Every structure is written in structure tokens, then in C-alpha cells.
Image 1: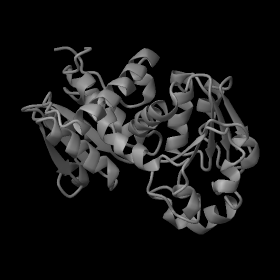
Image 2: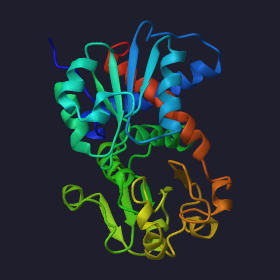
Image 3: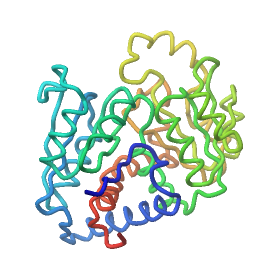
Length: 306
């Protein structure tokens, strides 16, 4: 039996495949809007393991399967033996004999790597504490739809060096853009990841400097899921790192603003920035649906180009 292909980080696909993926996602978006019926996942089942809760991830994956003729099973820790201590590899070997593809939203990235190692079907990383590659496909699709190719552009990340920031570092490599990261000391992304991408990534302490002339400005909550006890400490540390129209005015005249949501309005982003004409957060959120359809097409071998 051939080993299945997985999507755990953006580095699992080549730059050419990723570009084809976002183009296909836009095609699928157009097809849905035009009312075209398209069911490449007929009789296919997606297993969805959620150890972290979500709105956009669950609805986008589940809707993608239903709209494309397949089905999806939602599995929380209360619904599987993983929540009772069954080894990850055992769950992977059993579940992958019953479904066609699996997505996992969990904490430790090592857990999803172990699951993928034992799985007989493709595994998708729907978020870990280290990476969030599905969101990056949607982000790159959204930028391409509004502004064209992001190659050779400058992206400013304002905030914590978290899983989204790590995936933006991988995106800088795969989509060939420069990334400026503005964060307070002690909140930098993974040091090894920075070292491996030093020609593309710059760490700054001043959000204004990072945003100056940037073509895309991105932020995320200051305290990610599981870090709520650090909320006040992080609020103090990130004082002055809010993205608002005044900061955005320093960016390129055609710059876009993105946020993966949910947003803490009035903290990492101002209320008026979310509603600003330069904000494309609602398209960005919707594109999770289309990008994940394209991703599953590729992994299941139902994409016309595979």
C-alpha cells in the first residue's frame, strides 16, 4: 500500500503546488457562487478530531464535505478514546481504516506527526500550537484574489510569535515574500525557524517600522487558546502593538489587512480597523471553505489536475 500524503505544514507541498492550490480554491469559490453542483467527495468521509474548539475550522471543513457530496464526523475528546488515554498511534490505525481523510485540531504538533505516521489515509493539520497551515492557504488565496501574486511583496506581522506567525514564516519561503515581524522581547517565534529563514524574515520591536510600505498587514490575538492565564501580562507586554487605521496608513497605499479571527476588538485590533475598507477579514474567513476543498481534492486524488 502506498503511504498517504499529509498536510502538516506548508512545507509538505512545493511552491508550485501551493500556487496551484490557491488558484483551484478560487475556481471552486466561483463554481459555488454560480450554483454549479460538484461532488468529488461522493461517498467519502472526513474524520474531524477536535481537541481545541473552533467555529471557522469546523464549519468550513464540514460544509466543504457536504457541499462536495461527502460526509464528516465531528469527534471531540469526549467522543474518542484519545480523551481516555488511548495511544495516538492506536487511534490513528483504527480510525484511518474507517474514514477516507482526517483533520486534527490539537495542542502539541508532535501528536499530529505521530498520528500521521500511523494513519493509512491523509491527515490535515487544522491547527496545532506550532502551525496553522490551512489558514495560510486561505490568506494567500485572499491576497491573490484582491491584489494578485504576493511574490516579492512585503508582509508585516504585528504581535505574538505564535502558530500563525510560524506559518507566515513558512509562507514567506514558499510564496517568496519578505516578512517583518514586530513583537516585544520574549515573544519571538521559534529561533530555529528564524535561523532557517533569516534571508526572508526580520524581527523588529517597532510596529510602525514593520508596517512602513508593507503590502499586507496581519495580526492575531495576543493570548492564544490555552494562554488565558497570561492575558493581563500579555496585554501589558503588547501595549502599543494594536493594528488600527493610523498604523495602517503607514503601509503601502494598496495594502490589505488580515486577521484569522476570532478578534479581540480593542486589543490587538481596533474596532474601526476591522470595518476599514482595507480589511478583507470576511473574505479571508470564507476562503477557509474553498481552500480546504482544494486541499482535500489534492490529497484524495479527485482534483482534475492530479
